[in-house]
Length: 319
Image (cartoon, rainbow, N blue to C red; front, top):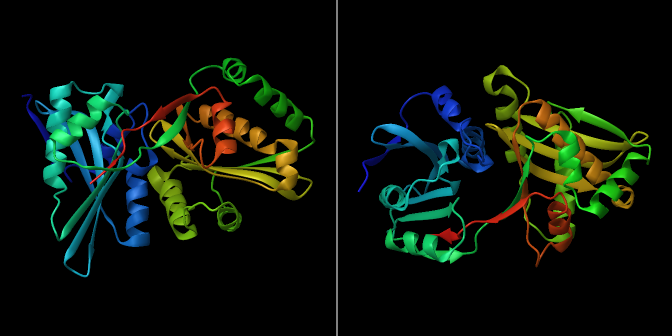
């Protein structure tokens, strides 16, 4: 077996961020800013692990730990581990990593672990996790990754035909776009998101978590390119808005909102296209368009797939 270990809470946050920037498809939930925001909102303690093979870093993993009633220990690891330079380790190394994670996230009457591994769905991956002592309890995560390294002409050409047509219609609708790299109007957007979640029956990110994550992103490293809000306005009236969080060389589309006028004009396509251009100019290489579910949210799924991005599905939720 390879010499694999996980170094927990060693080094500085700056060193962690430097390694995180080497992950081609990093996830928001594995970023330290997310861990810190979860800590300030719900009391989780981030635990940062550097995965090493023969002493050299090959990956990263963050767990969020919380004690309840001073006895019960809850630990979660969502959308990790992540691999440096985009290279998933060989099967033996991968198994060694998840055996170490099983040890770090034990299962007992007073300890619960919940994992959503960032591994592709499939019988081989399921068998590996079973050998390491994990039990599947739910489906995986499905999303769409959009490549921002191409030039704008190639990106636009990859959109589905009707997607491009509706984008052109929105561009002719006379809407004004506001790009805010500090997300100053985030409380307003979270109110729209809350109302939208109630109407459509989904669970939204809470306002306090979103604001604390925004604060962590904006202040991180002294630069204001960690979060962006793009709003489409008809005159002075917002008709569509999108919130995007940056993590390493990637970003995640966290919130998309449009009112009836915005839906009719296709304003959300204009918002997303503007965000893609802005993020690309700020060095973001890949955009995670957020979750899709053809059964419960067919319209959202069709919208995201219409960008021509790569649809992926992870192996499942495990305990």
